[in-house]
Length: 333
Ligand code: DGY
Image (cartoon, rainbow, N blue to C red):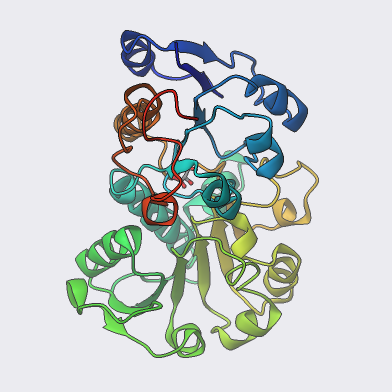
């Protein structure tokens, strides 16, 4: 009987669908994600791994799992999986594309609006009992409408962000590896530098890769307007956090809102948490009931390929492993 390991608690409907497949389903029930050592032990006899962002699924994990056919990531980003190691071993890697784009863009735009209109620091001030007399010159925020947003990475989430920005009458620029159709009235710029120089708000939507690691650092912050606000809902490592702290502290950059950090969770004594102009959320851009449920069901569809021997519907490396995929047939691994 194929065995599936699910590395976090999941929705009961997803669990029921997994169990209905006839597979032996093991859930990692602990409050914390498995340590690397625990993960290596737990995968020993699994055929399908339903993984999460907190699992580093590297070559060592894969080698500890000689029967592993499918790694189904709960999420669209799969930078926690060593895709080259998976390709070499013929293991299918899957994700949950599309269904979380709108929720993620909702969150990115919420962060933008919160920073622009200072809902974070001003509401904290009211709670501290420091709301003073009406003053035309106090508590001033920034407009959203008719300002320029620069979207880095015009994939599904980036284009949902563009749609929201247009709804708020913003001028939308984007930078992407490839020029796309002028979706939602967004204008392509030839370089990241131009986007940074022209934007009042910069929202990051590109995946974490070796090329995008620390893509936003001292040089990039200096190119941005001093009044600009950075929004990051992709991966923490795309931003050099030490450089960001210095830019925010020195006034080189007006503000930042981060849904993602390095590490996660960010330690309570991290310097970024001392800044009023930095808003940090606990990696929740896709965390709505409806979206997380859809992600769980899509992960189920993917991981169940290890039971049927069929290609998972959302496989990211099918072309790379077509010749040596372990997925073909239940017992040929
Ligand atoms: C994603 O889908 O990549 C989210 O960040 C959750 O990991």
